[in-house]
Length: 454
Image (tube, rainbow, N blue to C red; front, side, top):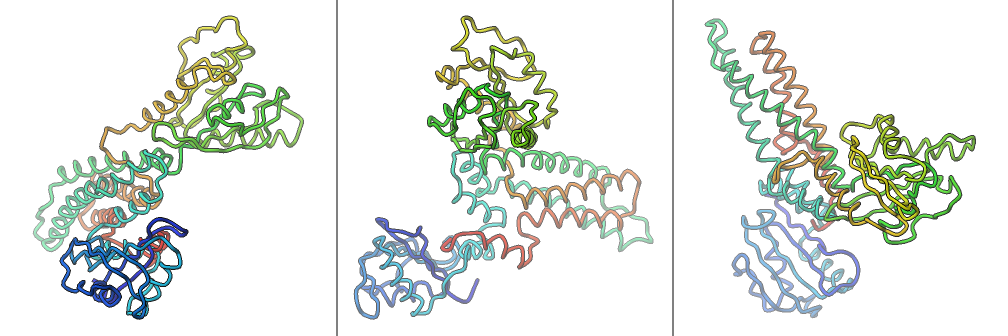
């Protein structure tokens, strides 16, 4: 527990119906008691609401509702008070100044959540999920953050870490009886555990691309030859004239980006320059950027004109791009409105649809297929967690590398003292995720990115 009491405005800046100030610390109730009438907060029970007036140096400021949470049954496991005012910025500033005068200290960014972590209410991964939950802009990002906040990743990692720690203890116990040639840790069981951990860590590591995409928005590149209808498709998906549409080839020379949420999944749509050979240096740079973005994207929408390019040719061109294996791909044969008869699309390596971006024919089918493609690439059973945090991805990769060294050491019959070096390294990196291993620098970097008041 911290020995001082912090205070901050916990609602966004600007005018609103309500504004809230939060306090946490040993004197949270006592400090609020001094500014509240009728002054009965000191005797208040936990999880109780109190209506009254807030005073500044004996002058009434506002009518308020005070929520009291007694330690340890609060977010921070400390005494916590939340005061609801009318949402005037002037009122909130005056009240905050008065609470500081009465003994509270202005909170640093993320300090309430940091106290929850330090006091054992949350582990570090769950604390980071709080920030992700606040920042979530789609149902997919929200559900992922909520699963992590509930301990989806943490519980599994803690269980694996505890099993590995038990084996480490047995191996180190063997070192105390080195001259007696005893073996407390069964090497076969240890190898089985390493195999299970490697499989699970690899699954979490592989989930990062999708998890990060859901968190930031799925990077979706619209690629195709000039005049295939890429910009028209972008405008149709966004339902607005976002990109200039022209019959002149090479109209789009730079990347145009916007966002759309489909069935709870956010997509970052990027309309790119048409890919073709050209002597125009500016257009050449646009083509280079288009192909580079396609290599980095999580999703590729390849648009082709059914009048000039067959589905088989389109599929062959995409195959030649040699995109990463985890890139979702959807082929869209465009301009069906200009054809007397729509050709039947043969069986191809990629999902394919015939559309008219101009008339928006079959557009709901396109958006549904986009969602299905992302879900198919999740490779996750319902309820299993995805990771979206760069720090977690790095730590898991380091832990996996250390466990691969342990597995190799077991195969070579290395002695216990050498095995424990790599096991301890794996334990360290797993502990970094949940906060069992942490430094002030790491904590400062994590919580410094939070908003003040949370």
